[in-house]
Each structure stands twice: as structure tokens, then as C-alpha cells.
Image 1 (tube, rainbow, N blue to C red):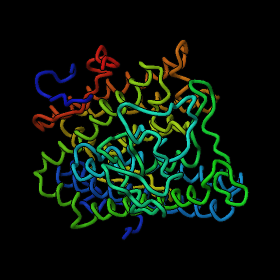
Image 2 (image 1 turned 180 degrees about the vertical axis):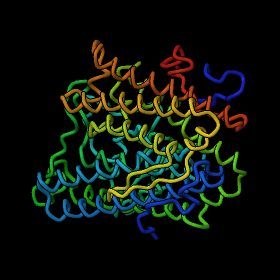
Image 3 (image 1 turned 180 degrees about the horizontal axis):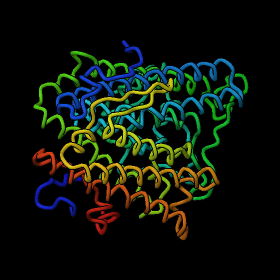
Length: 432
């Protein structure tokens, strides 16, 4: 359960474009840019980040096609590496959520989690079980079944297409029925992580895609699902790139706002991602429950990097800068510039807190590199790993407090920041 904590009563308590090098907004020598210029540069950054997400998804698609054409340990490894690389720009895009309804309404199609993976493919029933009281499609196994019965109607699944996956995503209105997006693809590439809170990611064999030497049954349909899900991801990202181009829905929504409302959208995204989503639902909740099922990239054990780049995206938005996947830099009028003009010490405080959060995220990345990824860190009794995770949460909470100071300093009015029971009402966690 999440809710919005409104700023007011308590500030601290509660077609791809060519690579951009500068914002299309007025840039350069002006030390005190207008709020309008900051908002327009923010939109240009969104276009660049989603453009990179699309480009990396296309690279992933090529790797997936290579895997299907010639299944081997090497082609599976290359597809997994392409998936991890695709997460780098996409996770940095999440700072554009929450304050922009066009993005938030769309996001569930590409990054929904956690998922009941038995909807998609075979699972280890010893750990997963065979049924769920809450989800009649818990073990529907689309890959093994050429037809499905949904609400009394037979759905033809004899050919797995992007359109079929789109139709089956969140069937029966159940959010755990995630059929599309990054995490469905992740599951197909890695399979279940059966290691619990011990080291190790999913270990799906490449022969699960090899019709001549098939393991797991239904290898041709599994390959069909993987390729179709990747194509659907590309289509969805193309839609979001178009939304941020001139005349696109997301840019138009932002342009229709006043400058102050635009800045409020920016800070809503910064605060809600840092506090309720990343600090709460994606990090603190798993630590409280010691549950690896609550980790974001749970099949690949890439969660540490996903968290790092989520936090990096917030820092990018505040500083008005982004490093593209081709290495080029975008820099333009920023929220930091506006805050520095109003209160130089507050800008320094915000920058320092963003750096603190990145350092806490880097500590989790370093832990994973040494053999203790996120699911190991949150294990019961792992006080050292748990402290690394808690440090990250603490820094995000403190960062949100400074973000609220920024909102007050810029007189942006009441800005609603997403909350999380794990942070705001921990006794309610697990009570239902």
C-alpha cells in the first residue's frame, strides 16, 4: 500500500533524434536561467534518456535473435549482457515518472514487478507452489498452452505474438500477471533464481531455446515469446520517445503547465522515486521481510545496479546533465542553477546529499561484485549487508527531506510525494 505525503504541514518529517550535446532550451552563459528554460531542458533530457533506452532495446533484440538462431552458452551470455546494458539508460529514466502522468500511466507495461512467473513458463513448484488464492493464472504457463480460458472465453495462444502478450499483460486486473516488459524478458533469459538469500542468479540453460536439443519443453514457443516480448518492448519505448518529441503527449502536458507547475513536476518525480518507490517499495520492504522475491531484478541479481541508476537518474535531473550511451554529454539549465541563485548553501546541501546517495548505492554495487548481491545483503542475520542496504535507504530519506526544502525555497506550493508503508507505517507491513 502506498499513499501520498503532501508537503506543507511538515517539510522534513513526513523517430530518434540525433545525440544532443546541449539543451534546445536557452543555454550557455546565463548563470541564472529562467524556470521555463529549466523545464524545457528537462524535457530534452527525457527525450534523450528514452532515446537511449530504445537504442539499447534494439541492441537487445539483435542479441535475442542471435540466441534463437544459434542457441549456445555464448549467445545466451551475450543476450543477458545486452539486457543488463539496456537497464542502464532505462533506470535513469524513472526520475521522469510520478510528476508526468503520461509516463506513469505507461510505465507498468515495461517495468512492472514483481511478477508471478508461472504465468509465462515452467517453474520449480517446490519453491513456487502450484496455485495462488489471489491469482487463478499463477501457473497458467502461456508457453506450454496454445489456448487459455479467461473469464469464460477461449483465447487463441497458438502463436505467441506481441499482440497476444499485450492482451495477456495483467489479465483479470491482477498486477502480478506481468506478461510484458523488462522483467518478463529477464525471467526468460535467466529463469528462476532458486538460491534464496544465498549467492547465485537464475541458471536457465541455453538448451531451453534449442529445438534440436530441447530442455524444459516447448523450446520453439519459448523462443517465440522471448522475441515477441522484446519486440513489444521496442514498440512501447518508441511510443515514449514520440511522447517527448515536439508535439508529443508528455512534452505537451509539460508545456501546458506554468513554470512553477513544471518545476513541481520535476520535484515530484525526484521525491517520489527517492522516497516511496526506491527507498520504500524497492529497498526497505525487502530488507524488512528478508525476502528475495521483493528485489527488483530478482532473476538476474542486477538489483544493485538498478538501484544505483535509479538514484543516478534523480541526480541527473537536479543537475540538468546526462551521459548518453555513446559517451556524449548533455548539460543545460538546471534545477540546481535555480536553487543556487535563491540559496547557494541549499544547493550545496542538495548536491552533497545526492553524492551521499550515490556513494551508498556504490557500496551495494561493490558488495555484489564481491559475491554478496542485494538478495544476500537482505538475508536474516546478515547485519553487515543489511546495514549497507539501510544506509542507502537512510540517504534516500534524507535526500527527500532536502528535496522538500528545495520545494519550499522555490515556492512551488503543495507537492505530493509518494509514500510507502515500509517507511511511514512499518507495523502495517505483512499485516494483511
